[in-house]
Image (cartoon, rainbow, N blue to C red):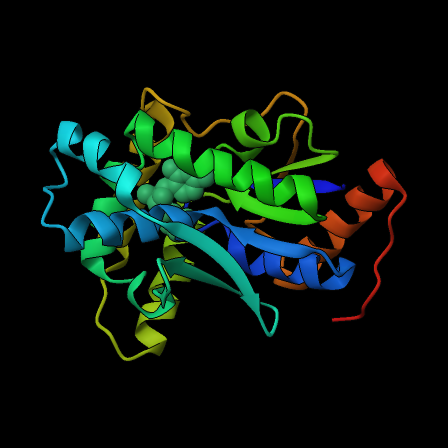
Length: 228
Ligand code: DC
């Protein structure tokens, strides 16, 4: 199987790019953040407090999380229920940020991710894919952009939806989250030694996608199967 790992901080454009690369290569896109979010939803529904690491560790084994692909989209199931519509709320984001630091949560989800990658060609994005989940991935990309650029992208996204936003506040939140992701004890966000750094600050989505397809070709000889 061919595995492509894409890691990087929040807001670097990982999921947008990973989806496009997967489509171009006819690979499966695996969004690991959605799995951490599904686990967070399960914990939240069970009334567990985000700061209670012991309860999270004890409860996480009960979450029956699985992944299916419907019309090319990743669907996350909790038991039989498609929970995709509930994964992006503020409560779930806040819980995921805490519960993803609990080792028992990571052990379970990393196993599921490794199983997915063992049986099909995948583009998988997250924080620890190149370092922990798929250390033998044929292609590893570390996607980043400056805090200013990521804040501006998020600001535009929100204001285009008609929501109010303050650029400086968004930038401070992003810097804060980077710090938390990079300094946590278990599987902190860091560039794998053999990952290629792609700084998207001054690149368009299409340019980044093409750059990664070029790297894939160089490392594996695999070329684009589809035009986007
Ligand atoms: O990428 P995202 O915002 O959907 O991720 C949700 C949360 O899960 C976020 O707090 C980071 C965490 N996460 C992680 O710890 N490891 C991963 N491989 C993916 C996400």
